[in-house]
Structures are given as C-alpha cells and as structure tokens.
Image (cartoon, rainbow, N blue to C red; front, side):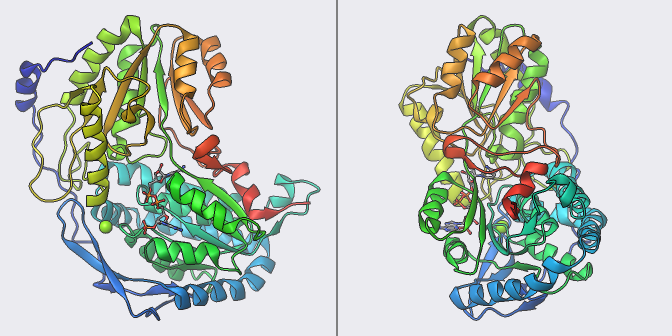
Length: 490
Ligand code: NAP
Ligand code: MG
C-alpha cells in the first residue's frame, strides 16, 4: 500500500497554476489597540495589560488587545448580571428582533469579517467567506426565530433564562464558535460574558462593535480578551450560572473539576479523533473529495476532522492512489488568495505540536507521503500529509493532531471497521461511505459518535444538533437541543 511519488502529475500541475487572486484588505479597519467590551462600551482593562495578536501567515502584528484579569472579569460579570434583569424580562419578540438584527449586520459586514478572520487565524479566505461567516449569521437567524417560540418549543415546561453565561471558545472557528454560544444564550433570555482565544480575538471585537450597531442593550453581551487565565477566572466566577466551553479535552476536564459542586450548568465541546470509514462499494471519487474535505479543511484544525481514514482492504490501493493525486493538486499559501486550499497553521505552538506528532509517526514506523510543495519563508506552515501503514497503537492513530495529517488504517469486515472506529477515547463525529442504505443505518447505530455523516463530511446547519460522546464532551449545540442548556425547564 506504499504511496509512490509521481513527478508527472507534479509537472502537469505546474502548467495549470493559477495566477494570484488576493482578496483586498483596504476596506478593513483594525484598530491598533482594543479595550474590553463591558456594559456596551470598550473600556481600558484594570489589569493595565495588553498583548499582541498576529497574522500567522506573515507573523505581522495586527493589533494589541487587552488582557482581562480578576477585576476585569468581576466588572464584566457584574455588567451581565445587571443587564440580565431587563433582558430576561423583555418581551420575547423584542429579543428576537435584536438577534435578527445582529444576523443581518453580520451579513452586511460579511466581507470585512471574512478578511479579518483569515488575517487573524490563517484560514483560507474561501473558507471564512463561504463557511464561517455565513454559518455564523445563519445561527443568529435561526435562534432569533426561536426567541419568541420557546413556549412552543418546550410545551408545558415554563422555559426561563438561567442568568449570566460564561463562554470560552477556541481559535479554529472564532466567529462561528461565538455564534454557536451567544445566539442560543440570548434567545433564551440570558446575558453573556465571552472570552475568545488568545490568538484570534479580532472578530469577537468586531462583533462587539456589531452589538453597538444593533443597539443591543448594554451588558447583554460582554467580550473579554485574554489567555487561559482569563478563561479560568471567568468559569470560576461565582455569579456565572452557566458555563459553555469549547476547546481541548484537557482543559475541559479542569473546568469540570473546578465547577463541580458549584451548581453551575456546564456543557463541554471537546476534542475528537473521527473515523472516516470507506467501504468497498463506496463511490471512490466522491469519497476522495470527502476525505480531503474531512482532514484538510481549515488545515485540519477541526474538532470533528476525519483524521483516521478506515478503508476496506480490497479498495485501499485504488483509493489511496486517487487520494494522493488529489492531494498533489491542493494549493498551499497566502490565506487571502481566493484559490488557496491550505492556509497557515494558527500558531507556532500548534505547528510544534503537529511536528512532534508527525515525528512520532515516522519513529513508530508509519509511512509518510507529502506532495511536493514549497512552504512560504515567513509564518507557520505544514504540508498536507498522509500516513499509511498506521496501526491502532501508533500515537498518530490515537491522539488528536489538529493539523493537516491523515492516518490511514485498513479493515476487512464491517465488524472490524466498527471496532477500530470506536477504539478511541473520543466520540465526536464519524463518516461512512457506502452505496448501501442499510449499511449506513447499521453503522450509525454502531458508531459511538455524536454526529455521523453518510457519503459526505463536515456538513453543518444551525438546525442540526452537534456534540460528543465520551471524552469529546457533553451537551449539544445547534438545533432545538442547543437551547436546552440555556433554559430552566420544569
Ligand atoms: P484549549 O487550550 O482548551 O483552549 C480553548 C479555550 O480555553 C481558549 O480560549 C483558551 O484560552 C481557554 N483556556 C485555556 N486554559 C483554560 C483554563 N484553564 N480555564 C478556562 N479556559 C481556558 O484548546 P485549543 O487548543 O485552543 O483548541 C483546540 C481544541 O478545541 C481541540 O482539542 C479541538 O478538538 C477542540 N474543539 C472542539 C470543538 C467542538 O465543538 N467539540 C470545536 C472546536 C475545537 P487561550 O487560547 O487564550 O489560551
Ligand atoms: Mg492572531
């Protein structure tokens, strides 16, 4: 099953290279410094501290953002507590109007938000433009629709808000994760204090401006920037009644421990190591697109990435040949270029983590394939990578790499596929590729994963709940289920 390099496709590719097509950045205004967004205003941090956020594709400093420490977290939670009284009592249809207004402004400012998302985080512009920002707007639109229909959503259960929600999000889908958290919380009548990730705070700060533009009552949304310490102060604050966290399993466990016994409501959306299972009757060309989308979308910085390809032995040779050819055509480079498929790795620390795990794959005896591709001199980059000859015990088959690295394993029977797919402490998502509907249904019953995609991958919709099993966390975001963690129900 070894993959051999074929120079002829590399040569063919050269003659079809695209001319540069960079997205314009002159319409975007990023301030040199940002304060904290508390009580409807940008305020200087009491900590007196700021830290830089960079563009990981160029290492250029984009802005300096405030670091919220204890006194600032207190101030933000107080503002949210004060706003809770009136926001929770506002007529639901008026709450809906604010949320729908936010959705509309997100659409109006979509181009600007997409460019800033790409500059601050390194993801290709075609992804932030076509996926992150439209989906973020769609989440507000969807939950705006529920705000005045909670009595119908949960009949005879007297839905009521919980209070102040402390929300902590990661750097892989900054604005989208913010939307997943803030939209249902507001629709349910809660107020929020949200902390974006240290490396990607800018779209959350633009979102703060959007709250002002929508004339959202002061204190309903508060955005505090900072690193892990800020997140920890927020989730432990005694007046926070509900904690929503998306991030690593390691930090999720810490938060679960620190909130135990406090009476706080908690949802955790954590890591994953999804199996993408290809049976011998699958449409292979379609499967190749799904595999590529599953692992190389957003440089593999995706909690539900299809990072373990399980392929039936009889088609493994043919599938891998097609896959390697497809990977040869991926364009890595300037994330602002509209033709770029693979952008920059989000941070130096994440690049080092990926490099370390890839090194372990080599040392443990797996075979590596990387297409010939030039990495830019500045910034953080990692080429699309395929490991074959991977066994279940290898670290690259067990640990979340969170980078553009696919581990390929094979199986002979459906039972073996299920056993290998479920042999992980995670359980966030999975993919199944087969022509047989009955096999899809059987697999979805067997797989211990919150989301199972069939003959597609990485499909998202605000109406569909998303969340994990086992060490991938608990609670659901999206859909009607996504409202439950934000409501008191009889
Ligand atoms: P992380 O280190 O857990 O960070 C996530 C967020 O928590 C960041 O805002 C981080 O701040 C903050 N944080 C760090 N330590 C904290 C603490 N002790 N208390 C409270 N907050 C703390 O995760 P990451 O490496 O940024 O993100 C990647 C992980 O997120 C992956 O494992 C991925 O699978 C998971 N993820 C899951 C989903 C899902 O829906 N299931 C979606 C996206 C990502 P700083 O970054 O500022 O330090
Ligand atoms: Mg940044």
